[in-house]
Length: 244
Image (cartoon, rainbow, N blue to C red; front, side):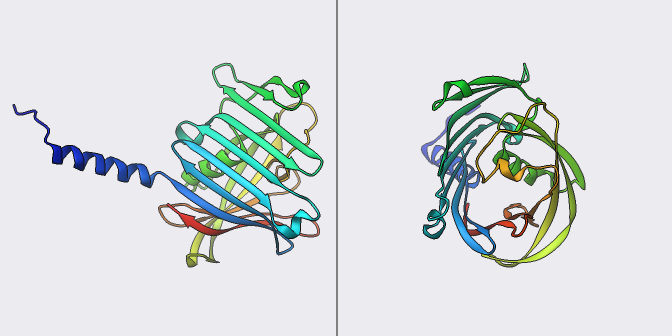
């Protein structure tokens, strides 16, 4: 049997593998708006089993509430996070923390690099996720009419129930496109008070309001829009640019 692998074959194999690798990456540029005014510009990159998120306030919003946040999530299959790094800079509030998940023991170890009194170990549900890994996990769940997942919101564990509530045509950077709309409701299941956190993620988790998400109705399942109803104005995320 001839087992020789020629140079052209090796080159072709490398080319195919590189194409597969490139298809696994995704970059989203988005704007977060309050009352229709852009307050934060964000970039989400999904590459090499790492979600990287950068969020900075616009020049106008910085006058009232300056934001300069970084998030990094190392994940395994189904976007289940292994490590979650947060560097938060918001006016009078800051975080620099690493959360490492020990799912066999159902524990999370939080290390704070700013305040050692915030370093701790706490209980989790085996499939607990952070906000961003949950956002991407839901891409694979859209074909289900409903389901649930668990969210780790700054040491508080929440049960999230999602429901597919229909389809909508949205104006977007891709033109007018069909989307699948999900509604997510939250219920706190861990004891203790909710800790103060960053205003872009965990502050969107509450029992008295639903979170709405729109994903493109195609094989990409791009999270095109997020809306959190508030009074008197809602918070919305919308994509400005997309690259895969």
